[in-house]
Length: 394
Image (tube, rainbow, N blue to C red; front, side, top):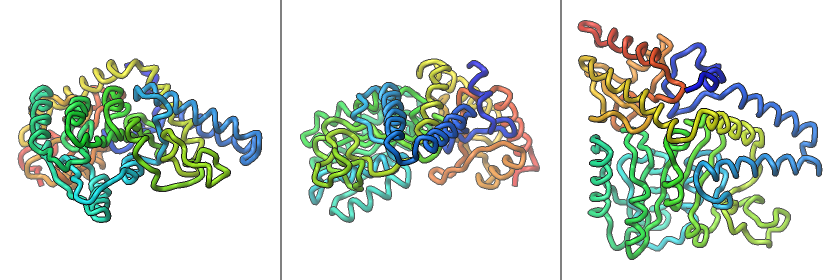
């Protein structure tokens, strides 16, 4: 990794940060791009004929860049506020029939699970689950087990499968393209919804985004963009079958006419006014990441840091990592015997080390990015060793 990207992150100057999976720090250049966009909006408008070319070019530029990252045509993208809205807006627009089955993995985020539960209640659907949380071995064994369990769980009324790309709790990567291929062979051709909250900016996403019907991302985690802006990639099949749910002037093919009909592309799931400086900020963050190499070399760096942390944790008495093999990406979840995770997170925070707790399973999670250094890993492991020394566990 070159030093340029890390040097752009002032949040790393006064802390040791392992919460990229919650929110990534914003680069100085991205903040400057946002401030410049605010200034440009005020200079041109903010609501004049002169401002709209700037607004349209800013949005279109980010749409094109994200299309390249996601490997899909820009017209198949819809901008959202976050991953949850990216999942829910197209999901609720699909043509459901009473008795359809929604098949969810047991590692989905509560926000998506709650949305599916409410959809099932309103539409009289059934929710079923299949297990992936206990798959803690190497990628090949994990992929095979996921496909076998999916096969066992699929039924004649299965109409949707929900499976995250990078599991936010265990840190395993799911074989999304292979899952999509299997669903294409099912008589019902169930839709595939992928929560990609931990994926964009972390692992290569193009193959999975192309294969899924709904592939919902956010810009504020591994992309180190501003909070409040996400994107969802939608399949051609979904665009042909789903209707917009939360509707506004941006959903319409002609914003000035309610009778004009909806956009035929991903914009039908966009609603109304967005904060344009956020688009400028995310575009700059993605550009900076591109300057660090393509997605595969970036993943190599992330894996190397995560693998180093995972290996060092093996040497600490009383510490157990969830995964039995080095992580395939940058999420390292672990348990410290005899210490409540929330208490340990607070103690680490007082030392300037920032991790988070998870509820299911109840554990700690550290995230490594291309910005993570070996010195930071050593600091975390050394502090954990101090806290777990005999007589100090509480």
